[in-house]
Image 1 (tube, rainbow, N blue to C red):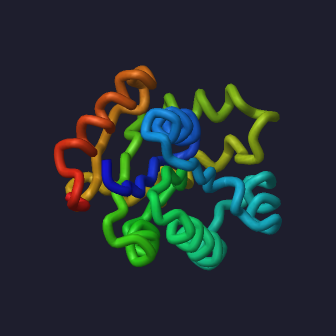
Image 2: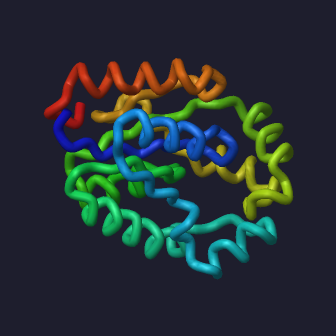
Image 3: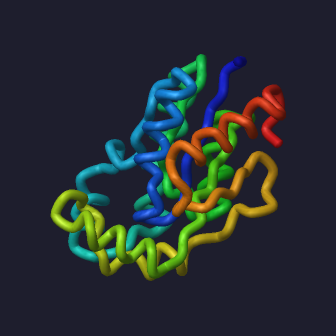
Amino acid sequence: MQAVWLVVMGVSGCGKSSLGQALAADLGLPLIEGDDFHPPANIAKMSNGIPLDDEDRAGWLATLGDELVKRPGGAVLTCSSLKRAYRNRLRAAVPTLRFVFMDISRAEAQARVEARAGEHFFSTSLVDNQFATLESPIGEAGVLPVSAVDPLTALTATVRHWLAAAPSTAA
């Protein structure tokens, strides 16, 4: 398989990290966990229930784009990528970048974020903000929407099939 750069995206609680880990292992690619690259100020804001704005995310997205470029053999990145402008910023770094959009209901995302309270810095009070910020990527080139409630094995197989169907394009 030729180099693949893939972003697993969606609101908090959709399962980006779980699917990202599964895909990285399945595809033999390095995993870039987007949350690991937030600056301390961003983490403090989110921990205190304060949503990030475009300015807060700008440096983070630039760093993630740089991390993708540092991996010429491809990579799997977990990143919310809530707005089209954020996705386009990452695409500017790697034009063949593809996105897997983990679609989930507000109620399911809220339940998942509440279940991991104390294990993750993201405040449960921010789930509504995530949905308000989300600009659905459905219909954009290079985006595969999947149901976040499907089993990981099924999601991994779906993504692998999608990648194999059009290996040399971003569509």
